[in-house]
Length: 106
Image (cartoon, rainbow, N blue to C red):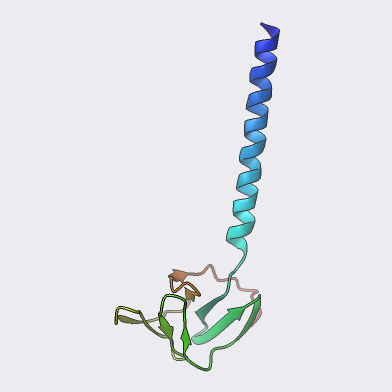
């Protein structure tokens, strides 16, 4: 009976440790800002390799989406939209709302 309890306790303990490791990996991954183009303070900014620079020319993403320096986004299917402050376009072409940080240096 003791062996069964010890085995059950060890299993529960190892499962909880694995769950915490997976959560920690997911948190660090989601906090890292990837390469993207975003509207910040009314200006288009390109984030590449952790560095930001003003977007001065049209950029084409992997899926064919084009992002213009004025914030206009033209999807591959022909639809267009204007980015609002805090929205971004990932290099894959996915439009997202980025969590903006007040202390983010531009």
